[in-house]
Length: 303
Image (cartoon, rainbow, N blue to C red; front, side, top):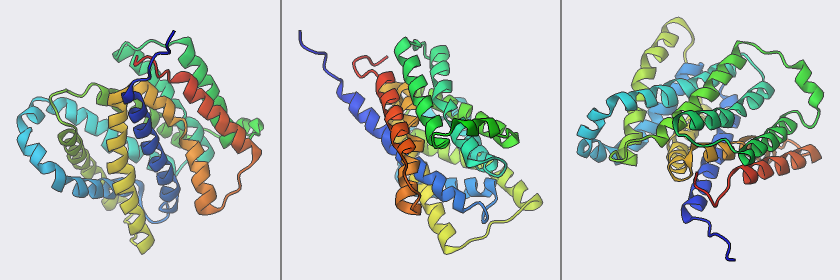
C-alpha cells in the first residue's frame, strides 16, 4: 500500500513558521540590550513605526484598491491590530522589566497551549492524543532548556506582575493567530498586514505619548538604532508576514507547536552571538523539543 503523500502546503507552512520563530528568537536577544535605553511602550512604538514605514510604499496601492473591503471588515481588523500589534509585544517589553528571563521563557511556552485550546473552541480543531503527547514532550524539552537540566530551579521561581503580563501576552498572541486564521478571504495579505500595522500603531500612539509625558524618554545610540531596525524590519514585518502565511497554510495550532522551537534557536544564537556555552542539557532539550513538534504536527492530515 502506497504511503499517503505529504501535501506541498505543509512544507511551505512549516518553513514559514520556522523562519518567523528564528527571527523572533533573535529579537529577544536584541531587546534585552535595549532595556536601559528605551522605555517599553516607546520601544514598541518605534518598532511598529519602522515596520509600517517600510511596508507602506509596497502596500498603499492594495489599501486603495481594497479600501471598501477594509471598511467592511474594519471591526475585525481593529481587533486584530489591537491584540497582535498594540498590546501583545508591548506587554512583553513591560514584563521584561519586572521578571527574569527564566520566567519569561517558561511562561512563553503557554502560547501553543492557548492556541490548541482556542483552535478547539473557535476553529473546531480536535485535541487529539497525538497533539497532547507532542505538547508534553515539547514542554519537557523547553523546561529542561531554560533550567539547564536543573529542575530544582523551578522551586525558586518568584512570580510577580511581570509574569502575569507575560502570561497575558502569550494568550493574546494565541488570540491573534486565531484571528489570522479567520481572515476574510476577499482581503489580500498585503492589504491585511498594512492595515493592522497602521491601526496598531495608531492605537499605540496615545500610550507612548502618555509614557513620554509621565515616564521616561528614549535614548538613541547607533546600537539602539540598529536594533530598532532589526526588530522593526525583521521581528515585525518579515516575521509577521511569515507567521500569517504559516497560519493560513497549516493552521494556528500546528504553527503554535513550531513556536516551541523559539528557546532552542535563542540558545543557538546566544552561542554564536554572545558566546554562551552549550551543554549536554541543551542538546537533550533540543531533541525533546524537535521530537514534540514532529509528534504533534501530523503532515498527513491538514486538520
